[in-house]
Image (cartoon, rainbow, N blue to C red; front, top):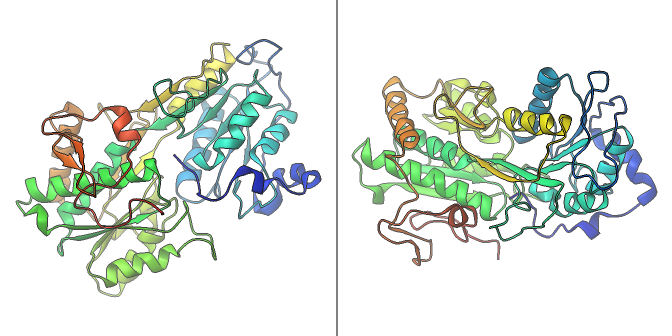
Length: 423
Protein backbone atom coordinates (compact mmCIF):
# COMPACT_ATOMS: atom_id res chain seq x y z
CA UNK A 1 0.00 0.00 0.00
CA UNK A 2 1.37 3.34 -1.02
CA UNK A 3 1.34 6.05 1.60
CA UNK A 4 3.92 8.51 2.92
CA UNK A 5 3.87 8.65 6.68
CA UNK A 6 3.26 12.06 8.13
CA UNK A 7 1.56 13.62 5.10
CA UNK A 8 -2.12 13.62 5.97
CA UNK A 9 -4.83 14.90 3.73
CA UNK A 10 -5.75 17.92 5.91
CA UNK A 11 -2.24 19.27 5.55
CA UNK A 12 -2.70 19.34 1.80
CA UNK A 13 -5.89 21.41 1.59
CA UNK A 14 -4.70 25.00 1.16
CA UNK A 15 -5.39 27.75 -1.34
CA UNK A 16 -8.71 26.21 -2.33
CA UNK A 17 -9.40 28.72 -5.05
CA UNK A 18 -6.16 27.69 -6.80
CA UNK A 19 -6.69 23.95 -6.66
CA UNK A 20 -8.53 23.39 -9.91
CA UNK A 21 -6.03 25.46 -11.85
CA UNK A 22 -3.16 23.51 -10.31
CA UNK A 23 -4.79 20.19 -11.08
CA UNK A 24 -5.24 21.18 -14.71
CA UNK A 25 -1.55 21.50 -15.41
CA UNK A 26 0.39 23.25 -12.66
CA UNK A 27 3.65 21.86 -11.32
CA UNK A 28 4.79 20.51 -14.66
CA UNK A 29 2.08 17.86 -14.93
CA UNK A 30 0.31 16.87 -18.08
CA UNK A 31 -3.40 16.92 -18.84
CA UNK A 32 -5.02 15.44 -21.91
CA UNK A 33 -8.45 17.01 -22.23
CA UNK A 34 -11.11 14.65 -23.49
CA UNK A 35 -14.51 15.44 -24.94
CA UNK A 36 -17.27 15.40 -22.33
CA UNK A 37 -19.13 12.12 -21.88
CA UNK A 38 -22.17 11.05 -19.94
CA UNK A 39 -22.09 10.44 -16.19
CA UNK A 40 -24.15 8.07 -14.11
CA UNK A 41 -27.60 9.03 -12.98
CA UNK A 42 -28.74 9.11 -9.36
CA UNK A 43 -29.06 5.79 -7.57
CA UNK A 44 -26.72 3.77 -9.83
CA UNK A 45 -23.35 2.28 -8.94
CA UNK A 46 -21.73 2.34 -12.34
CA UNK A 47 -21.85 4.73 -15.24
CA UNK A 48 -24.49 3.78 -17.80
CA UNK A 49 -23.42 2.04 -20.96
CA UNK A 50 -21.90 4.37 -23.53
CA UNK A 51 -22.48 4.25 -27.25
CA UNK A 52 -20.07 4.21 -30.17
CA UNK A 53 -20.75 7.93 -30.64
CA UNK A 54 -19.90 8.56 -26.98
CA UNK A 55 -16.51 7.01 -26.22
CA UNK A 56 -15.64 6.26 -22.61
CA UNK A 57 -13.77 9.09 -20.94
CA UNK A 58 -11.60 8.11 -17.98
CA UNK A 59 -9.23 9.89 -15.61
CA UNK A 60 -5.75 8.65 -14.68
CA UNK A 61 -4.20 10.22 -11.55
CA UNK A 62 -0.46 9.56 -11.31
CA UNK A 63 1.72 10.09 -8.25
CA UNK A 64 4.90 10.69 -10.26
CA UNK A 65 5.89 11.82 -13.77
CA UNK A 66 4.17 9.94 -16.56
CA UNK A 67 7.61 9.28 -18.13
CA UNK A 68 9.43 8.08 -14.97
CA UNK A 69 10.31 4.72 -16.58
CA UNK A 70 8.74 3.16 -13.52
CA UNK A 71 5.47 2.97 -11.60
CA UNK A 72 3.69 6.00 -13.04
CA UNK A 73 4.72 5.34 -16.64
CA UNK A 74 3.39 1.79 -16.32
CA UNK A 75 -0.03 3.21 -15.38
CA UNK A 76 0.13 5.84 -18.11
CA UNK A 77 0.83 3.18 -20.73
CA UNK A 78 -2.09 1.15 -19.39
CA UNK A 79 -4.25 4.18 -20.07
CA UNK A 80 -2.96 4.32 -23.64
CA UNK A 81 -3.72 0.61 -23.90
CA UNK A 82 -7.36 1.30 -22.98
CA UNK A 83 -7.51 4.09 -25.54
CA UNK A 84 -6.14 1.82 -28.26
CA UNK A 85 -8.29 -1.21 -27.43
CA UNK A 86 -11.54 0.53 -26.60
CA UNK A 87 -11.46 3.78 -28.53
CA UNK A 88 -11.66 5.56 -25.19
CA UNK A 89 -10.23 8.93 -24.20
CA UNK A 90 -7.92 9.51 -21.23
CA UNK A 91 -7.52 12.55 -19.03
CA UNK A 92 -4.18 12.23 -17.22
CA UNK A 93 -2.71 14.35 -14.45
CA UNK A 94 0.73 13.37 -13.17
CA UNK A 95 2.89 14.41 -10.20
CA UNK A 96 -0.08 14.42 -7.83
CA UNK A 97 1.95 14.40 -4.61
CA UNK A 98 2.58 16.91 -1.84
CA UNK A 99 6.00 17.94 -3.15
CA UNK A 100 5.11 18.61 -6.79
CA UNK A 101 1.57 19.91 -6.13
CA UNK A 102 1.57 21.21 -2.55
CA UNK A 103 -1.93 22.65 -2.77
CA UNK A 104 -3.69 19.96 -4.74
CA UNK A 105 -5.94 17.31 -3.23
CA UNK A 106 -7.09 14.14 -4.94
CA UNK A 107 -10.70 15.22 -4.43
CA UNK A 108 -10.13 18.38 -6.41
CA UNK A 109 -8.37 16.48 -9.20
CA UNK A 110 -11.33 14.09 -9.38
CA UNK A 111 -13.80 16.99 -9.48
CA UNK A 112 -11.85 18.56 -12.34
CA UNK A 113 -11.76 15.30 -14.29
CA UNK A 114 -15.48 14.78 -13.83
CA UNK A 115 -16.10 18.32 -15.05
CA UNK A 116 -14.24 17.33 -18.23
CA UNK A 117 -16.53 14.35 -18.71
CA UNK A 118 -14.69 11.49 -16.99
CA UNK A 119 -16.90 8.47 -16.29
CA UNK A 120 -14.23 6.34 -14.59
CA UNK A 121 -11.32 7.34 -12.33
CA UNK A 122 -8.06 5.51 -11.63
CA UNK A 123 -6.13 6.67 -8.54
CA UNK A 124 -2.78 4.94 -8.72
CA UNK A 125 -1.00 5.30 -5.38
CA UNK A 126 -1.58 4.34 -1.77
CA UNK A 127 -0.70 7.94 -0.93
CA UNK A 128 -4.09 8.79 -2.46
CA UNK A 129 -6.08 6.63 -0.03
CA UNK A 130 -7.93 9.33 1.91
CA UNK A 131 -8.54 11.48 -1.14
CA UNK A 132 -9.95 8.79 -3.39
CA UNK A 133 -12.16 7.36 -0.63
CA UNK A 134 -13.57 10.83 0.01
CA UNK A 135 -14.05 11.40 -3.72
CA UNK A 136 -15.86 8.08 -4.02
CA UNK A 137 -18.20 9.10 -1.19
CA UNK A 138 -18.83 12.48 -2.81
CA UNK A 139 -19.57 10.88 -6.21
CA UNK A 140 -21.21 7.53 -5.40
CA UNK A 141 -22.42 7.04 -8.99
CA UNK A 142 -18.95 7.26 -10.54
CA UNK A 143 -16.88 4.06 -10.76
CA UNK A 144 -13.37 4.44 -9.35
CA UNK A 145 -10.32 2.24 -8.89
CA UNK A 146 -7.73 2.73 -6.17
CA UNK A 147 -4.70 0.78 -7.32
CA UNK A 148 -2.67 -1.08 -4.68
CA UNK A 149 -5.29 -0.59 -1.96
CA UNK A 150 -7.57 -2.87 0.04
CA UNK A 151 -10.70 -0.74 0.57
CA UNK A 152 -12.89 -3.27 -1.31
CA UNK A 153 -11.45 -6.36 0.41
CA UNK A 154 -14.15 -7.62 2.77
CA UNK A 155 -11.66 -9.88 4.54
CA UNK A 156 -9.06 -7.12 4.78
CA UNK A 157 -8.27 -4.67 7.54
CA UNK A 158 -9.38 -1.50 5.75
CA UNK A 159 -12.68 -2.46 4.13
CA UNK A 160 -14.55 0.76 3.31
CA UNK A 161 -17.77 -0.69 1.88
CA UNK A 162 -17.94 1.77 -1.00
CA UNK A 163 -19.92 0.29 -3.89
CA UNK A 164 -18.15 2.43 -6.48
CA UNK A 165 -14.52 2.04 -5.33
CA UNK A 166 -12.62 -1.11 -6.32
CA UNK A 167 -8.97 -2.15 -6.00
CA UNK A 168 -6.53 -3.66 -8.48
CA UNK A 169 -3.00 -4.86 -7.68
CA UNK A 170 -0.65 -7.32 -9.35
CA UNK A 171 0.89 -10.12 -7.25
CA UNK A 172 4.33 -8.59 -7.45
CA UNK A 173 5.55 -10.96 -4.77
CA UNK A 174 6.28 -13.31 -7.68
CA UNK A 175 8.14 -10.69 -9.69
CA UNK A 176 10.24 -9.81 -6.66
CA UNK A 177 11.04 -13.48 -6.07
CA UNK A 178 12.32 -13.62 -9.65
CA UNK A 179 14.35 -10.46 -9.09
CA UNK A 180 15.85 -11.93 -5.93
CA UNK A 181 16.63 -15.21 -7.68
CA UNK A 182 18.44 -13.38 -10.51
CA UNK A 183 20.47 -11.49 -7.90
CA UNK A 184 21.26 -14.63 -5.91
CA UNK A 185 22.36 -16.48 -9.03
CA UNK A 186 24.65 -13.64 -10.12
CA UNK A 187 26.24 -12.19 -6.98
CA UNK A 188 29.90 -13.05 -6.53
CA UNK A 189 30.34 -11.26 -3.19
CA UNK A 190 27.22 -12.75 -1.62
CA UNK A 191 26.06 -9.24 -0.75
CA UNK A 192 22.82 -7.86 -2.17
CA UNK A 193 21.37 -4.41 -1.51
CA UNK A 194 17.67 -3.60 -1.68
CA UNK A 195 16.83 0.03 -2.37
CA UNK A 196 13.52 0.49 -0.59
CA UNK A 197 10.99 3.35 -0.81
CA UNK A 198 9.01 3.91 2.42
CA UNK A 199 8.14 1.30 5.04
CA UNK A 200 4.69 -0.27 5.05
CA UNK A 201 2.99 -3.63 4.58
CA UNK A 202 3.44 -3.57 0.80
CA UNK A 203 7.12 -2.74 0.84
CA UNK A 204 7.89 -5.24 3.60
CA UNK A 205 6.21 -8.07 1.67
CA UNK A 206 8.00 -7.14 -1.56
CA UNK A 207 11.44 -6.80 0.03
CA UNK A 208 10.85 -10.09 1.86
CA UNK A 209 9.82 -11.78 -1.39
CA UNK A 210 13.05 -10.64 -3.05
CA UNK A 211 15.02 -11.99 -0.10
CA UNK A 212 13.27 -15.36 -0.25
CA UNK A 213 14.00 -15.62 -3.99
CA UNK A 214 17.65 -14.70 -3.50
CA UNK A 215 18.07 -17.15 -0.62
CA UNK A 216 16.38 -20.02 -2.47
CA UNK A 217 18.45 -19.67 -5.63
CA UNK A 218 21.69 -19.01 -3.73
CA UNK A 219 21.20 -22.22 -1.77
CA UNK A 220 19.44 -24.57 -4.20
CA UNK A 221 21.03 -23.69 -7.54
CA UNK A 222 24.46 -22.56 -6.42
CA UNK A 223 24.82 -24.89 -3.44
CA UNK A 224 25.93 -22.14 -1.09
CA UNK A 225 25.29 -21.67 2.62
CA UNK A 226 22.30 -19.33 3.12
CA UNK A 227 24.02 -17.92 6.19
CA UNK A 228 26.71 -16.54 3.89
CA UNK A 229 24.20 -14.42 1.95
CA UNK A 230 23.93 -10.80 3.06
CA UNK A 231 20.67 -9.09 2.11
CA UNK A 232 20.36 -5.51 3.33
CA UNK A 233 17.43 -3.11 2.91
CA UNK A 234 17.82 0.68 3.01
CA UNK A 235 14.73 2.88 2.82
CA UNK A 236 14.72 6.35 1.23
CA UNK A 237 11.36 7.51 2.66
CA UNK A 238 9.09 7.76 -0.41
CA UNK A 239 8.50 6.12 -3.78
CA UNK A 240 10.98 8.40 -5.53
CA UNK A 241 13.54 11.05 -4.67
CA UNK A 242 12.23 14.30 -3.21
CA UNK A 243 15.24 16.54 -2.49
CA UNK A 244 15.28 17.67 1.11
CA UNK A 245 12.60 15.17 2.10
CA UNK A 246 13.89 11.69 1.21
CA UNK A 247 17.31 10.12 1.25
CA UNK A 248 19.00 10.45 -2.14
CA UNK A 249 18.64 7.06 -3.90
CA UNK A 250 21.82 7.72 -5.89
CA UNK A 251 23.76 8.08 -2.65
CA UNK A 252 22.10 5.01 -1.14
CA UNK A 253 22.90 2.89 -4.21
CA UNK A 254 26.53 4.03 -4.14
CA UNK A 255 26.71 3.21 -0.43
CA UNK A 256 25.57 -0.33 -1.15
CA UNK A 257 28.30 -0.84 -3.73
CA UNK A 258 30.92 0.84 -1.54
CA UNK A 259 29.93 -1.55 1.23
CA UNK A 260 30.60 -4.66 -0.84
CA UNK A 261 27.28 -5.35 -2.54
CA UNK A 262 27.61 -6.28 -6.19
CA UNK A 263 23.87 -6.40 -6.95
CA UNK A 264 21.28 -3.78 -6.02
CA UNK A 265 17.57 -4.55 -6.38
CA UNK A 266 15.36 -1.48 -6.68
CA UNK A 267 12.05 -1.14 -4.90
CA UNK A 268 11.49 2.51 -5.82
CA UNK A 269 9.62 3.95 -8.78
CA UNK A 270 12.64 5.31 -10.63
CA UNK A 271 15.89 3.93 -12.04
CA UNK A 272 18.70 5.40 -9.92
CA UNK A 273 19.98 1.97 -8.83
CA UNK A 274 20.45 0.86 -12.43
CA UNK A 275 22.00 4.17 -13.48
CA UNK A 276 24.53 4.02 -10.64
CA UNK A 277 25.38 0.40 -11.42
CA UNK A 278 25.87 1.30 -15.09
CA UNK A 279 28.21 4.14 -14.19
CA UNK A 280 30.30 1.95 -11.92
CA UNK A 281 30.40 -0.89 -14.45
CA UNK A 282 31.66 1.59 -17.05
CA UNK A 283 34.54 2.29 -14.66
CA UNK A 284 35.47 -1.38 -14.55
CA UNK A 285 33.53 -2.65 -11.53
CA UNK A 286 31.70 -5.97 -11.69
CA UNK A 287 28.26 -4.91 -10.51
CA UNK A 288 24.65 -5.45 -11.53
CA UNK A 289 21.19 -4.08 -10.78
CA UNK A 290 17.51 -5.00 -11.02
CA UNK A 291 15.14 -2.05 -11.64
CA UNK A 292 11.40 -2.13 -11.00
CA UNK A 293 7.87 -1.44 -12.24
CA UNK A 294 8.28 -0.77 -15.98
CA UNK A 295 8.96 -3.35 -18.69
CA UNK A 296 11.54 -1.25 -20.56
CA UNK A 297 13.48 -0.11 -17.49
CA UNK A 298 16.57 -2.15 -18.41
CA UNK A 299 17.20 0.22 -21.32
CA UNK A 300 18.86 2.69 -18.93
CA UNK A 301 21.89 0.37 -18.62
CA UNK A 302 21.17 -2.91 -20.38
CA UNK A 303 24.53 -4.64 -20.08
CA UNK A 304 24.40 -4.88 -16.30
CA UNK A 305 20.63 -5.24 -15.93
CA UNK A 306 19.67 -8.69 -14.65
CA UNK A 307 16.02 -8.17 -15.49
CA UNK A 308 13.01 -6.19 -14.38
CA UNK A 309 9.83 -7.27 -12.60
CA UNK A 310 7.07 -5.06 -13.93
CA UNK A 311 3.37 -4.31 -13.64
CA UNK A 312 1.19 -4.63 -16.71
CA UNK A 313 -1.94 -2.73 -15.70
CA UNK A 314 -3.45 -2.75 -19.20
CA UNK A 315 -5.45 -6.02 -19.11
CA UNK A 316 -7.24 -5.50 -15.77
CA UNK A 317 -7.76 -1.80 -16.44
CA UNK A 318 -9.26 -2.64 -19.83
CA UNK A 319 -11.68 -5.12 -18.23
CA UNK A 320 -12.70 -2.43 -15.75
CA UNK A 321 -13.26 0.09 -18.56
CA UNK A 322 -15.36 -2.45 -20.48
CA UNK A 323 -17.50 -3.07 -17.41
CA UNK A 324 -18.22 0.66 -17.17
CA UNK A 325 -19.13 0.79 -20.85
CA UNK A 326 -21.60 -2.08 -20.54
CA UNK A 327 -22.91 -1.01 -17.13
CA UNK A 328 -21.71 -4.05 -15.15
CA UNK A 329 -19.00 -2.45 -13.00
CA UNK A 330 -18.75 -3.80 -9.45
CA UNK A 331 -16.31 -2.76 -6.75
CA UNK A 332 -14.03 -5.72 -6.06
CA UNK A 333 -10.58 -6.31 -4.61
CA UNK A 334 -8.27 -7.94 -7.16
CA UNK A 335 -4.77 -9.21 -6.32
CA UNK A 336 -3.78 -10.70 -9.64
CA UNK A 337 -1.18 -13.39 -10.24
CA UNK A 338 0.88 -13.59 -13.45
CA UNK A 339 -0.47 -15.48 -16.43
CA UNK A 340 1.78 -18.49 -15.92
CA UNK A 341 1.24 -19.60 -19.53
CA UNK A 342 3.21 -16.51 -20.58
CA UNK A 343 4.12 -13.99 -17.91
CA UNK A 344 5.21 -11.49 -20.57
CA UNK A 345 2.00 -11.55 -22.61
CA UNK A 346 0.93 -7.90 -22.61
CA UNK A 347 -2.70 -8.85 -23.24
CA UNK A 348 -3.10 -11.32 -20.39
CA UNK A 349 -0.49 -11.08 -17.61
CA UNK A 350 -0.76 -8.37 -14.91
CA UNK A 351 2.78 -9.10 -13.70
CA UNK A 352 5.83 -9.94 -15.80
CA UNK A 353 9.59 -10.30 -15.66
CA UNK A 354 11.89 -9.35 -18.52
CA UNK A 355 15.22 -11.16 -18.25
CA UNK A 356 18.02 -8.65 -18.76
CA UNK A 357 21.14 -8.79 -20.94
CA UNK A 358 23.28 -8.86 -17.79
CA UNK A 359 21.98 -12.31 -16.87
CA UNK A 360 24.30 -15.07 -18.08
CA UNK A 361 22.95 -17.90 -20.21
CA UNK A 362 23.50 -20.41 -17.40
CA UNK A 363 21.76 -18.23 -14.85
CA UNK A 364 18.94 -17.53 -17.26
CA UNK A 365 18.31 -21.26 -17.56
CA UNK A 366 18.26 -21.64 -13.78
CA UNK A 367 15.95 -18.65 -13.41
CA UNK A 368 13.62 -20.19 -15.98
CA UNK A 369 13.57 -23.38 -13.89
CA UNK A 370 12.74 -21.32 -10.81
CA UNK A 371 9.92 -19.50 -12.62
CA UNK A 372 8.51 -22.82 -13.80
CA UNK A 373 8.50 -23.99 -10.19
CA UNK A 374 6.58 -20.91 -9.10
CA UNK A 375 4.12 -21.49 -11.93
CA UNK A 376 3.49 -25.13 -11.06
CA UNK A 377 3.32 -24.48 -7.34
CA UNK A 378 6.20 -26.86 -6.63
CA UNK A 379 8.07 -23.83 -5.27
CA UNK A 380 6.15 -21.88 -2.63
CA UNK A 381 8.52 -19.62 -0.75
CA UNK A 382 5.87 -18.46 1.71
CA UNK A 383 5.90 -21.85 3.43
CA UNK A 384 7.22 -22.36 6.94
CA UNK A 385 9.26 -22.49 8.92
CA UNK A 386 9.73 -18.73 8.59
CA UNK A 387 10.33 -16.20 11.34
CA UNK A 388 10.04 -12.45 11.45
CA UNK A 389 13.10 -10.30 11.92
CA UNK A 390 12.72 -10.24 15.72
CA UNK A 391 12.69 -14.06 15.86
CA UNK A 392 8.96 -14.45 16.40
CA UNK A 393 7.15 -17.06 14.34
CA UNK A 394 5.64 -16.00 11.02
CA UNK A 395 4.87 -19.46 9.66
CA UNK A 396 5.20 -22.77 11.46
CA UNK A 397 6.96 -25.70 9.82
CA UNK A 398 4.87 -26.74 6.81
CA UNK A 399 2.40 -23.87 7.18
CA UNK A 400 1.53 -21.96 4.00
CA UNK A 401 0.82 -18.25 4.27
CA UNK A 402 -2.63 -16.89 3.53
CA UNK A 403 -3.20 -13.80 1.40
CA UNK A 404 -3.87 -11.84 4.59
CA UNK A 405 -0.59 -12.95 6.18
CA UNK A 406 1.41 -11.92 3.11
CA UNK A 407 -0.47 -8.69 2.37
CA UNK A 408 -0.21 -7.40 5.95
CA UNK A 409 3.41 -8.17 6.83
CA UNK A 410 4.33 -6.40 10.09
CA UNK A 411 8.08 -7.06 9.84
CA UNK A 412 10.84 -8.08 7.49
CA UNK A 413 11.99 -11.69 7.70
CA UNK A 414 14.68 -13.19 9.84
CA UNK A 415 17.99 -13.05 7.99
CA UNK A 416 17.34 -9.65 6.44
CA UNK A 417 19.23 -6.53 7.52
CA UNK A 418 17.51 -3.16 7.73
CA UNK A 419 14.62 -1.52 9.54
CA UNK A 420 11.19 -3.15 9.72
CA UNK A 421 9.50 0.08 10.83
CA UNK A 422 10.10 3.80 10.73
CA UNK A 423 9.68 4.18 14.52
